[in-house]
Length: 379
Length: 124
Image 1 (tube, one colour):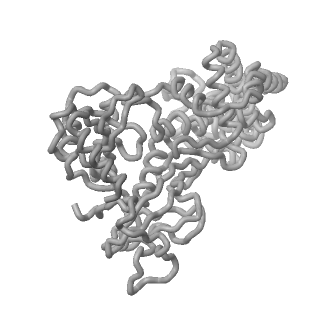
Image 2: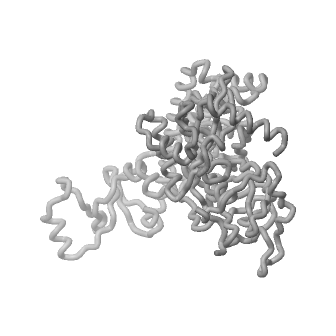
Image 3: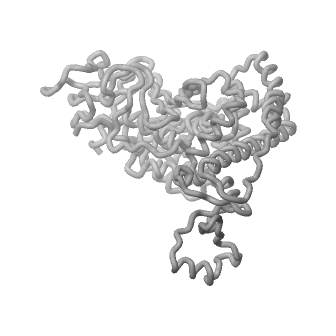
């Protein structure tokens, strides 16, 4: 489609359809004169100023299908268009399809203990939000602030701003049209379509908000508090926002752990946070300045070197869980004392390049926390 | 053995005979797993591996529990069961710690993790 808009073709609009120039030769002339039309209509080709044009696509279908035809272009127009009507980042953060909601409702429940005793009931989103609300101390002032949000004010304001636009795009008149004019018209029509969709979405959200129960108001308050604060940690699982958008670093703490070297000496590694960023490239890293055989240096935010690692194509809850687990497993169970795999060896070797040393992590095997761990390949 | 360790060992030895053993098999680094209860008389002298295999071989699980088993099975493809960082070939009660419910009932608890190993490093 974009290729067409970047061309210098002469086009014709008729009855909502786009007609493209037709290469005219005797065979095509016969086909035009006698051949059946695919849809039974008489006008599958027209003649304008002595030139022949063939019926192609419906202009409305280009508009309706633009998101699928060219997602990048559509996304660009959408961002430009809605940027004029900014929405509170807090409200963005708690929309159902936000990354924050995925992290809170799909990833977090996996890593934290929700049930008391030996019940292992899977919690619904609402139940999990109740659980979160109980674990977070939300100040009263914030509850009042949430109530003000829930009076629908900001949404109504945004809705009013959008409705003020009111400008309509005139339908295209039948007749010849330049590619440039067509492109401009499509851009404007697409903007109007996006605004209409946003208005419909806001109206639905307002209707939903009017039906909120007391419990749902509490859930909203919890979500809004987390979105506003931009950070949360429960039972060693946490997240914090990067920048002002909807991107986060989500992490899981490893706790202390022990690795053995070639001579079966124990090294006690301190707790660290294995994290995944919700932006590409998706891969596990260690947040704090840390040293380990699978980390190149002794600095913060180093990627964990994992054999055969392939970054997933998309960000899903399952992928985040797998990445975090992969990173933790690599740190805790991936080092092979015999092969000394990794950037560094725990014990200095003949070919050892003196960059990172682990002598300060050495502990006496008789110490209480020196739990014996067999190497993977012993089994 | 320190005094505290001796005391704990004695407590564990004492309680093994009368306390139920609760095994929790957790998929990966999940916080909650599959719970199975072994009454006194049904677990003594058995290895933790045997008990885990027996638990995973049971059929009567709820749908929620079946989902956990699926996750455990996925982790065990190329992975293994670990308790306190070790393989689970020892006697089950040897891994247990004594805990008690809110109502004060004591039991032996053993958490076992199904870990899919992720080899690290670029060098062989």
